[in-house]
Image (spheres, one colour):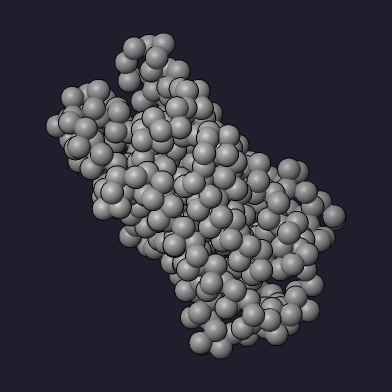
Length: 414
C-alpha cells in the first residue's frame, strides 16, 4: 500500500478508543429503522390502513432514499465537519424513529421514516470519511469494526424485533419506537466526542484544509476508478436488497415452512457478521482485491445453482454460501477507503460510489417481483440474481485493481 499523506491530527489512545466506539455505535443505527419495520410491517399496514402500493414503496424505498439523500453529507460536512454532522444524523434517526411511532396516519409515518433514512444516508457516506480522516493507517481494522456493527444492527434487530414487540405488549408503536433508544445513545456519545475533541478537530481541519470538500479532485462522474467502485457497490447492493426482501418467500414457495424460511434469512445475514470484520482486514492487506471478488462471486454462483437444483435439501448450505457472497458489502466499503489517497478523495468517492450504487440497486427488488408475477415461478428471478452476481464480479475485478482516483486526476491534468 502507498504511504498516505500525514494530514491527520494525532489521537491519544483514550480519544482514539472513544472515537472508534462512537463510530461503532453510529453504525449499529444504520439499519434498525429499516429492518425493525420489515418485521412489523403487517401490523403497521393493518393499523394505518395502508394500500398495497404504499406498503410496497416502504419496502423498496430505502436504497432510493440513500441515493438521493447521501449527496447532502459532504456539503454539510464541508461546512461543519463530519463529526458534528454525524451527531446531527444520529439526531435525525432518533427523531424519525420516535415520531413515526406516534404517527396518526400514513403521510406522517412516511415523512418520519424519510427523516430517519436521511440520517442513515448521511451516516453511510461519512463513516468511510471518518475512518480515513482519523485512522488512515488502520483502514482495514476500523472499517471491519464498523461494517460488523452495520451487519449486527441489521441481522440482530431483524431477529429480535418481533420478540421485543411481543414483550412490549404487541403494540407496533412501542415495538418500533423502542429502537430510538439505540439512536439516543449514539447521539449522546457523538456529542461527547465532538465537544471533547473540538481542539483536535480544529487541528485536523487546519492540517487538511477541508477534509470533505474534495478541492483539486476532478468530478467523479469522469473518473473511471470511481465508476468501477460505484458499479461494484450497486451490484452487491441490488443482490443484498433482493435477498432481504424476497429470500423467505422464495424458500416458502419452494416448500419450506415460514418459520424455517425466516431462519434462513437470519443465517444469511448472520454469516455476514464475522465476515464484515474479516473481509476489510483481508482487503487492506492486498493492493489488488480481485482475488476476494472472484472468490465471493464463485461462491455466490454455486449457491444459485444449488438453489435451482435442490432448493429445500440444501437450503441451509445455500443460505451460508449466499451470506459469504454478501461479504462484498464490507469489501466495497473498504475499497472506498483504499481507492483514494486522502480524506477529501474518500469523501467524494464515498458520496459518488454509494449514491450511484444505491440508485442502481433500487430497481432490483421490483424487477424480481415483476419477473415472478409474469412468469409464475422463481426460475427467471433466480437467473436475474445470477446475472447480477456475475455483473458485480466482473466490475469488482476492475474496481479492485491497485489504482486511486487522485492518480486518474493527475493523468488528466498532465
